[in-house]
Image (cartoon, one colour):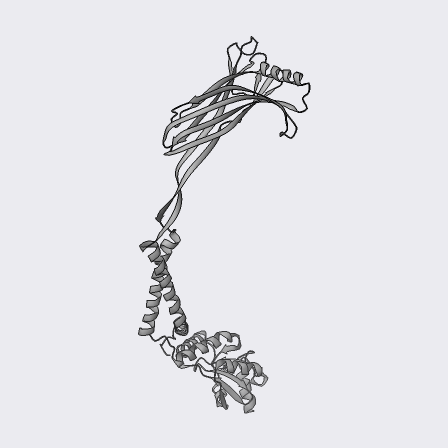
Length: 410
């Protein structure tokens, strides 16, 4: 038997693909290298610049109320002098006076000659249901204080006191004098906060208004505290910085360049040092291999009796042609492991296709497999079938071919 090995089909098909698509693959590699090179240059060599808007400085003002009431009347729950602080509800009878402090602080990187003015006014008014219609209004200044040279994070404060009983009495007197209150009477303290000075190197003027609601309900009064209210203003500037890119471009650019150059070099080397184009024999072998895989179900392997080869022989150009003929003739295709040829027996002829020379190693392997299996040289020798009963369908049994020969000899 021949000791040669068949060619590597994977390599042959790879060569065929590279040869057919060489120009396209080379173009793709060169484009990849060009794009990768552009990315490398613009990312690592000359990334260029861009304009960013940055916060140059910020200025934050926080304002809020602190309130408490001292117990001044004896009772069984609280000791006289006890301070009730930051509650929602206070008791009018035992702690009628609400002590209020309005406080303001500001935060800045740098400040100079900063003054804070706090003006608090008690407002008693009667408003309509929509809140926009004011039927009457009474205003009383409670505190007006300006604190100078206030440093960042330093607290500026103004204090005042509200007697809840007196406020309630004032509202009742106004209603009696007017004779009617078509809307709802409400009481609150409004404080205007003004901060002025040189802050973060610029002349700055900031103002806002905060309100503290006081609702009188006879024996109690409720404080509606808004909590700390904060305002922040920022000064921005545009700066020119070096453009930066993410890891996808920083890493992907060099990788794309490397792949493009390596691919182009590999293609050029393969084209120059190794012949990519398949020889006619190699193309014929691949065509045969494709046909053998496609029509495997129509092909049976066993040794043919010598009498079959005494028939007139017609040669097929390809295995595909032979299988097509066998299908049309309702017969099978036999692969002879001794010769490697493929046969179809029909009528008085044997139709034969002989594989290309590169398939010789496959033929040797098939012969060794048949010999190892102990298969008989012919169906007659096995004694399995009466030649007189055989038909010519190559799929039925190995006796088909022998039967056809016996009929002809008879």
